[in-house]
Image: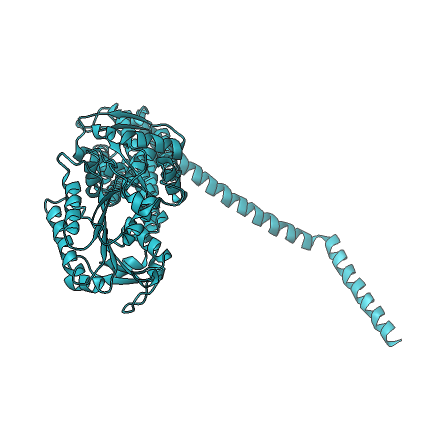
Length: 563
């Protein structure tokens, strides 16, 4: 066997969570790594991107060479497999279409076609725990089939079968974590009672790396996982106690279908439906460890195999468990403040509003507080989810995360200002046409908010769509009221308004007259006093005396100068 520093590893699925963590583990142990990736730029932004050698260069110990391509690109596969000692196959299609299983089979067969002639000494594949008997879900059956193809390829293969991987970045852990954090109570399907053997990411990486050193005659599957097997419902309860210090109430409702559960998961967590469905399908079975033969070949990780509690605590080192609560409270506070301001400005009991002509199709008065309460709750919940997910992306190092969070927060803030302003324009300023114009801006903002939520998750866009629909209806209703009440003042208001206008004009004229008289009086007084003083004898005497005094003083100064 070659010295470890001279060994070359190939990692497929390199930009995935497990693949990325494995590359870091291999680099720490002196491997030169080839990473197969569709996008070199994406690879360069991974946590191991700083170890990538320049394009066209060969990786040495502690370095990564990126091979741009995928498992359907024969030329890229041949280049990736050349000179490799051990290959880790970490690819699994998560498509929703009916052909994903055929796609998985095609990809692994192409991989074998390139790996076998290249002389690769061992393949390590990460599959899923599953029952021996019974019908498997399509996704789990596909993973088993891929493992079988590798085991029958003629290349020594170790297929490691794991359940839920507990680690910050694992999709299965993300579903567990966000469900526990974001729901104070859970109504779940019957499969939540199924038993699961979790595995810490630390332990999974240990066995993935150790499998490279198995003897050449080892060609089989191995189960990996914690020593304890628990129902999924119990994992949610335990996570809540460890991470949140708050228990969760969970009820089982067997009528919930896989599709409905996947839709709900994609609504409340960062996982999309395409990713959530296979995870749910894998939980339809008891996924438990049945044998621990791998311990005899590889031993145990330092400190022993992690328990569920230890695995969660290890994963939480890089997780901000208070992020959701902060976001939800902040967003809800802003929405509640808007609702309070709008409520204070709204006055449907005043005489002006009651005297307005209204279309016959206007909803009853009771409908408005009910609808708006539901809409405000909808805005707060969906906006909290969108903002929290964007911040999660930013925390994970995704470049667009912070930008998405800021963009949505600005759009939400503008929408809430328009929301509260409308009530002031209509009920306080009593300007229906101006309020109608503002309602157009509010409707456009609401539709845009639903569009932004839909980019985060289609289910969230659908959930926020009623807000856009209601504000659009408000445009039509507001415009109809404004049209029916082109002059909405009552006869008494008209008389009072005309009287006030006439009185104001009279007051303005009187004020102008007073100002003119005052100016004239000041001018006359100033000119009259001046003329009188100039004609008054004492003034004349005093003036002439002052001139004589100044002449004498100048003479005295001249005399002193020449003396």
